[in-house]
Amino acid sequence: MTSNWIGVWTLYEREVRRFVKVYAQTLIAPVVTTLLFLAVFALAVGPDRGEIGGVPFIEFLAPGLVMMAVAQNAFANTSSSIVISKIQGNIVDTLTPPLTAHELTLAFALGGATRGIVVGILTMLAMAPFAGIGVAHPGFALFHLVAASLLLSLIGIAGGIWSEKFDHIAAVTNFVVTPLAFLSGTFYSLDHLPEAFVRIALANPLFYMIDGFRYGLIGYADGGLTAGIWVLVGANAALWFACWRMFQTGYKLKA
Image (tube, rainbow, N blue to C red):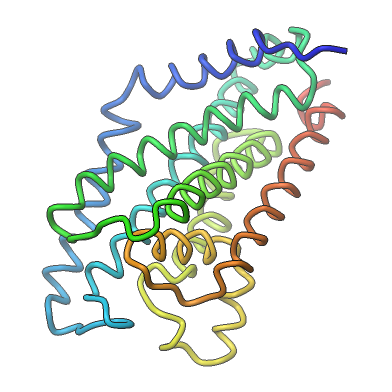
């Protein structure tokens, strides 16, 4: 048995062209929104917030805001693609070609991850003059950027397959993705939380993607870096299996 790499590349290219064609909405708008978040915190908090772990608050905040933009856009790319195809009735055009469940998962996941990575890089470049962030550990920064993009892309696939209309995917966004993102240590350090909330944060996989990425940029981390890598690898593997199984069985895709 051989893999249909031409089919995988074609589907991946379609997913990339979807967001590149409307780049003002899919690439530029997230950067502007993230800069507005940064500006609000910079103006509202200012230098009075002090430092966290020896790092100025704005520099501490910036990596988390970048990862939130990455997460939202990687998720949006795959979820919207699948939901639109299901509503318009042309999902059959994706399922009919000789692509295995693994190949479908790979193409969709890489398409969403690509958007997340591009948004992350653009956001970092736009933030650098204002937040003063650098790259303290390039390997950690790159790994967590890719792992986070893939993680949310896979969540988007699962959410898109489960959803039957836009209200359903909005529910996944509002009740799963957004709470996990906001409760992942973006705006605060675990040192400032009660012990019970620290346990909750450590159970959130999005905490590890932000914490590891923050360490990659500014050299500060709240949690265990090795444990965070394993959590992200495990979460991606579990989600990959779930998405593969959905495509394999035709869950909510085939009549």
